[in-house]
Image (cartoon, rainbow, N blue to C red; front, side, top):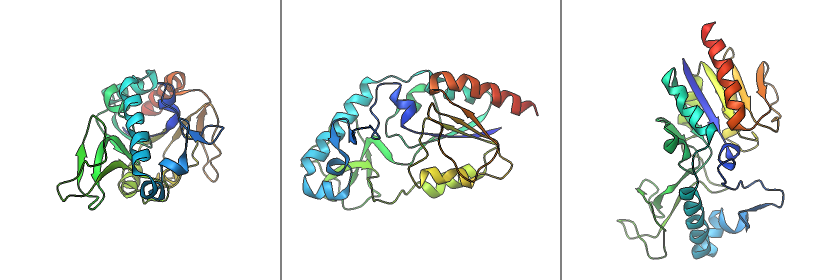
Length: 229
């Protein structure tokens, strides 16, 4: 079966990676408007680079949790594509082989002159680091207010899903949250999140109100049952 999985910050939070929807409106102690918009980049490139360099180090120190590992194990029985809103690499490190990063990756830099020039990175991005065309490198991250270039590909993948699994996301961030409406009408939908998302206009959803590491076990039971039908 083709299983398409949409993951959000909740699954990475269990590995110690802060979410940006904290109750105080801060992301790892920073105001989002100061570090995650193009205006912020124009205003203070050094601060933005510092923030993402810290996020990259945090992600490198984190380890995939049971939720990531159980998703990767699904590939033993099914064709699985993970569409993630997360910018870490925990899905890949857990063993998932098909991962689409909607909002970019901490482990890529791109040219500020030509967004097609993308480079794999491991260390920090610093002022003065330039692309082959001579422009400053920036994190290959989709900032608030920017277009999400992978959303059309993600929608096409979702349309082919036999099962659509949603793990650890509030379903409040668009256009990612709209992917649920790209599924075929008969496609079963399973949602794993301790805070039941309000998903209007979609019927017949299997809600598992638990965190990813425990809820995924129940999701797999449902998937096994659906596979037999």
